[in-house]
Length: 108
Image (cartoon, rainbow, N blue to C red; front, top):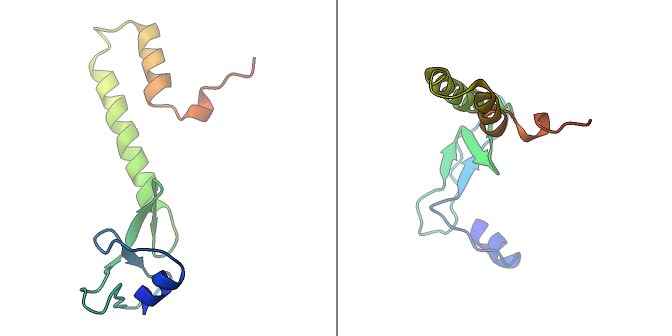
């Protein structure tokens, strides 16, 4: 069924990369096939799409946790080296690698 939809819309599918995310509070156990001879597509509870992780309830909890863990690791690395790096260099490293880009723009 999906294969015919892809063909009608001039699309191809990579079964190894294609995932199924069922939305809602009570996700159903779906078995979708890209082709009749292939195994069913993987049903996942979370999906990373364009760098943003979403779940079946359309919340960003997994994404926020991922960003938090990355920032926490970078801050922990900076805390280990204050004796070796001057304070102004530490501030520049913090601004360059930890702060999001929209926080580094100065309007004055």
